Image 1 (cartoon, helix red, strand yellow):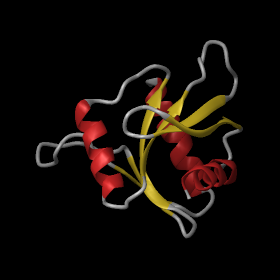
Image 2 (cartoon, rainbow, N blue to C red; image 1 turned 90 degrees about the vertical axis):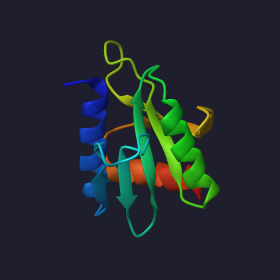
Image 3 (cartoon, rainbow, N blue to C red; image 1 turned 60 degrees about the vertical axis):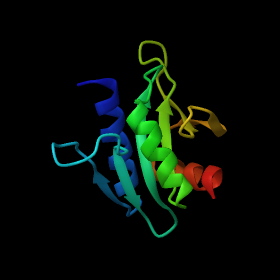
Image 4 (tube, rainbow, N blue to C red; image 1 turned 45 degrees about the vertical axis):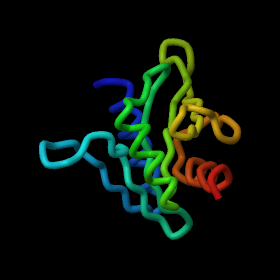
Length: 125
């Protein structure tokens, strides 16, 4: 399992634990490329999250879609785990805009849904 898949599984489980509905977006031939990995629906926050680990970069299509969503008023961010799984026991999450610029503070994440949702709300609202 790739680091990004592990992160996606943890994020989805954490958000569902606080009663969020999470739609995992899987690319296919009839869909334009670049759509963020997750659509999150919660009473406190709705938005799109593209998940990345380490120094993985967003594609041009991903940056374009995130920028287009944001320009139209829809929350869309990259959620990056900056932790090195070989060295760190916990995730170090950072929200980024479409250009890769960090927004707000880094979250040393304990894996709970409430901590993740509270951080997203505090940084994006």
